[in-house]
Amino acid sequence: MNHVEVKEKYKVSPFYVIFLVHSMQTGVGVLSFQRVLAKPAGTDGWISILLAGLIVHILIWIIYKILSIVPGDIISANNHAFGKWIGNFFSLLFILYFLILGMDMIISYINVIHVWMFAGVASWAFTVVLLLLIYYINTGGFRTITGIAFLSVIFSYWIFFVLIYAMKYSEFTNLLPIFDHNLLDILKGTRSTSLTMLGFEMILMFYPFIKDAKTSQKYAHGGAIATTLLTVLIYLVSLIFYSQKQLELTIWPTLTMTSIVELPFIQRFEYIEISWWAIFVIPNMTICLWAASRGIKRIFNVQQKYPLWAMSIIILLTNIFVFDQDSLSVLNKIINPYAVLFLVLYLPLLLAIIYIKKRRKRL
Picture 1 (cartoon, helix red, strand yellow):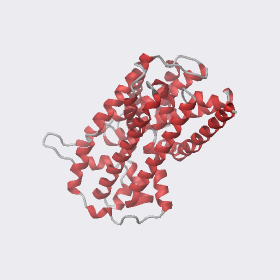
Picture 2: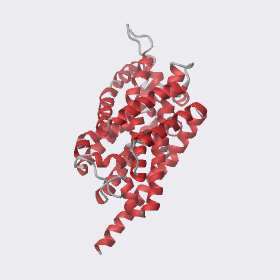
Picture 3: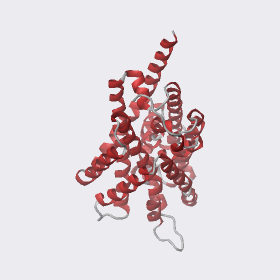
Picture 4: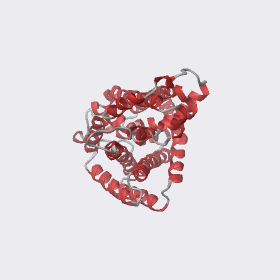
């Protein structure tokens, strides 16, 4: 089962890749990335974001290069490069990563709901609601998932209202001094912000579901550019709204900034933002679990609904028995930096091996 064929009716237009990539990168991390970035990079954190964005573009180019040589998905590429058994081992690592990333997003969002809105409601209750919704969207197929991702991007840009509102209470001298940090601090900042930039690697799984997939590369880069620019803008507004020390101590700077918004008909605007943020987070969770269950389907030749059920149960049990701030911290530490490092090292290596095998065949 090395090669994968997807019927034309299940495929989406290349243009929608911009929304799939952008929606995957714009999740819960946008609410809190400023704090972990401000500690090492301070006023030069925007340079770290741009550098992280550049790395994302290089990795997207590598992904498309791999899949142009080996048609299919990451499982096809792994099997082509390493053979069935070793290839499936690396594919299972990717599946585990997709599952952990999805679990991290679910737990992170529920943690925000707990702290800001419903402290007394059990976490498993929120988990059940989210998992049922994710399962329902997944059963609609990849075109349905793409539609949800499209809507999430369209609805996400109301955040500009919050940013413009916050600028009324900002101090622009907080942006100074510029270029005050050394290269090591900038690189530490890049590592800190990498969790916010993740999501583009889902191309490795949904590539076969894109019509004329090779033409979608420019849209993948477009989605990554949109995420990078939005992240830079949010960070710059956060810098001028907070002092340096405030930004380092505030757990969810974007949410705290939202709490200053006052409208005649709304008292607690941040409640609306947290509820509204579900529209942005649900595509993240859905695509992660779709990618993980799709990978299991490809390797073990089972119906996709069975691994999806199993993964949902694992996430639910995790929320019931080990849900707390410490477990969330552990998940974040697994993904960042280890998962990021794995992607940065593994994808170029995979491309090199596939390219060498291709040249040997020519000879």
